[in-house]
Amino acid sequence: MYKRLAEVLTCVHGGDHDAREEILKFLQARFLKLAKLRVMGEDAKDIVQETLMVVDHHLQEIATVEGLLAYTNEVMRNKIGNHYRRRDLRRRYIVTSDHVPEPEYDMTEELETAELYRLMHKAIDELGEVRPRCRELFLGLINGLSISDLCERLQMPRSKVDEWLFRCRQALRRILQKRHWIQ
Picture 1 (tube, rainbow, N blue to C red):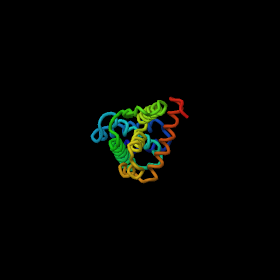
Picture 2 (picture 1 turned 90 degrees about the vertical axis):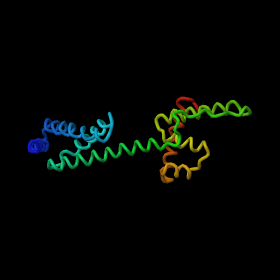
Picture 3 (picture 1 turned 120 degrees about the vertical axis):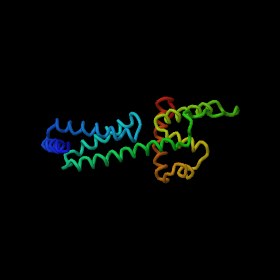
Picture 4 (picture 1 turned 135 degrees about the vertical axis):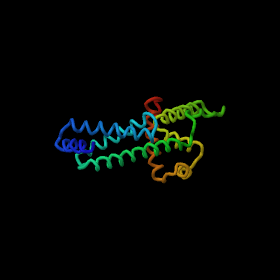
């Protein structure tokens, strides 16, 4: 098998497109079996696909079959690790509910202020569907957490939290302007 793979790899270096496809199909079958042992369902297929994209990009640089297999193993190991890191980050959200709770209004508040709060919470909820970290940051601030408290809870440096807040505020402004016509 390795002898045939070495021949095909030589053809790839010569620019043969069919040889490139043959190597990628071989790697796909091999690594899909391995990925399914580590990751469940469609995520395994996604990881293999991401791995193959990286390998395809660097295939011309790989000289030997051993180098190809070692490189592909390493890329796939990193992709699996990234998958679990992203999954763990999604689980660390401060707010666990899927919906931002409606604020309770004081009867003495002006109607315009109450409506503004309602639209703000609705916009945060919409933004949270696309960017859960933004919902997490805004609800933390609304609930009285300081930036330092957010840094501790998220285990992120202050500069990273500031960067996220900047981006989240921009996204929230766009939602308020486009969907709710608030300047």
